[in-house]
Image 1 (cartoon, helix red, strand yellow):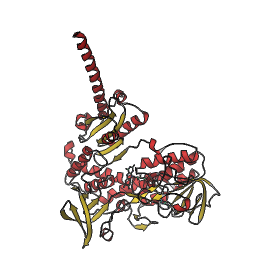
Image 2: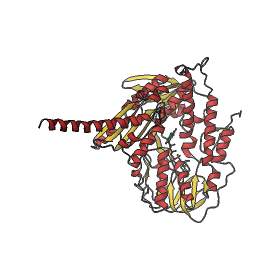
Image 3: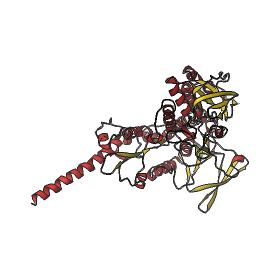
Length: 514
Ligand SMILES: Cc1cc2nc3c(=O)[nH]c(=O)nc-3n(C[C@H](O)[C@H](O)[C@H](O)COP(=O)(O)OP(=O)(O)OC[C@H]3O[C@@H](n4cnc5c(N)ncnc54)[C@H](O)[C@@H]3O)c2cc1C
């Protein structure tokens, strides 16, 4: 086993130095790297080598374009280093611990208490991150003919930028600088110290008591993960429910699941201030008029993300941006400077990995190959990877009604699905909305253990224009939880068949009475 040491890397948080971390850093920011001499001109210069930047670079290079990619910190950006990858690896292990604690439900017996080996959990997270970093490595990019520059990019003109003293001239540029944690302005928080996604995955010892601020996807995932890893966890959410964007019944299932896990849930609650007493952090809360204090060892904030626009000298390039919403783009992802585009978290409301990828591909098509692809044409699914997962695509029924679209909804609870019963995963549902009197799918919400996998069927149906009647005719392997989708489609078909049957009966009776 490797002894852990700590090293400060660039502007990032301290990292544990074990073989996995060495492999990752060697892949995404090798110590002996030297920037190449710049070419006189690039077809596309990309700022930021997170998901959007990497996808754009690889797609454009594979079609023969001359590409320069600039990264100030680590290749792979948020998703690989501090976001999707480590959080999903952590959630997987935390789910296993939760299952072990309830092994008796499955007729299994675990002798003694389940003991969490936190250092081993985090070692696994680092191992997963290292393995996945191979795909985002310096070697992969240079092999694809991409000129890679490490350093902070700064625009100097409408068609040039500077990095580490080198000037890169471009025909087109892509700003893909992502986003960073939006830390709430709470008196005393900075002095007390806090975790964000940028340093939480570098923990080698768990806090005994943790307060998570924020009940969006990030806060919910982290609260459940840490609680299941034996950390006494409280979650504070300003609003009256978690995941405010989701349907109420989905958010309620999550609240119930948190309660079962033993997370202390404080909805409708604001953090007033934080102060330190000895080694503990005392956090004052208010809920309506009720004041209380929780005592914890660590605080993790998950209260949203702010686009990275500072330090780019966007004015020099004629690009508009604002600190809250990021780089301003039109539906073709062009900025005010027609040479410069943006993609991913730096310009989009939907801050997801899949959206970053899709928007990057739009930019490559539009900027380099005369495309006219629009952001508004995308159908974007998303998922919160709690247990159960909550996934959604398309319109919510309430959004359809707000737009005066007549909507009919079909819901199948998972306790009616054989596989969910067999798996003891009966909490959840599949809800599909169609335009009334048609089988056109407007949207779907799925709450299930693997909702993130199941939502793809609905996304495909919406993108391909496949109606719910056709979904009902698709044979779903038995037994699967995805059968809930077919059952919802069956429910639709039954309502249509009924009304057809009713029409025939009425006509028949009318004929008899002649
Ligand atoms: C904890 C967490 C979990 C998440 N889980 C999921 C999930 O499960 N599914 C999902 O779809 N999404 C998830 N996301 C969101 C997802 O990670 C982001 O949407 C995605 O990484 C955005 O990619 P991007 O390329 O736009 O930005 P980033 O990945 O942030 O990349 C931007 C890059 O630009 C670099 N940069 C910034 N400024 C400059 C500059 N001036 N010069 C040079 N380089 C610069 C940065 O160093 C960074 O590497 C999660 C996010 C977090 C925080």
